[in-house]
Amino acid sequence: MPTEQPLRLFFALKCPSDLGEAVCNWRDSQGIGGRPVTQANLHMTLAFLGNQPVAAVEGLRQLAASIRVDAFTLRLDQLRLIGKDFACLTPSQNPSPLNQLVEQLHAGLSTHGIVLDARPFLPHVTLSRRVQTLPGLQPRPFQWSVDRFGLYRSDNTPRGVLYSELASWSLANPRR
Image 1 (cartoon, rainbow, N blue to C red):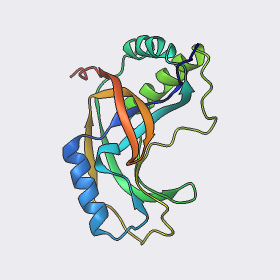
Image 2 (cartoon, rainbow, N blue to C red; image 1 turned 90 degrees about the vertical axis):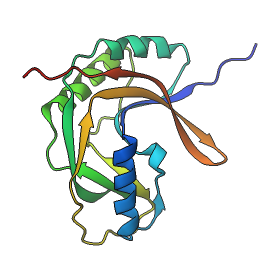
Image 3 (cartoon, helix red, strand yellow; image 1 turned 135 degrees about the vertical axis):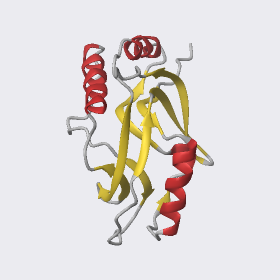
């Protein structure tokens, strides 16, 4: 009896296409080098779940639907190397709703028995991989109006990594 292959899953903020285009245009004009991330794959990971059984997806959907966080603006205004060789845009300050979203997701995932990386959350959007050094660049600030988050599947294909949205959820409108 064949078993279903596990899914490589993560929760993330998907970069809107207009912002993604602006970020890629800026990146490409700066000579950052390395292997650029395609515009379609620009995102900010909130929680990487690794390989999960297909049967886990429904519980993950229910968990995400229970999250209550206000929409927010994210300002990506720093360029830095993360890990050995990832050129990334990061915010100089994390908005409170971003921290709340990550905390609620991580707490819920823990109750589902999903063990996450022990490292603290470091918000970033990877621009390019295999970057040797970064020129002393100060990016122009990129404003990102975040109003939803999603559950994504990662697949290796002959044409590269493909991220597919399995579901997404709206964030609440902030009270004025």
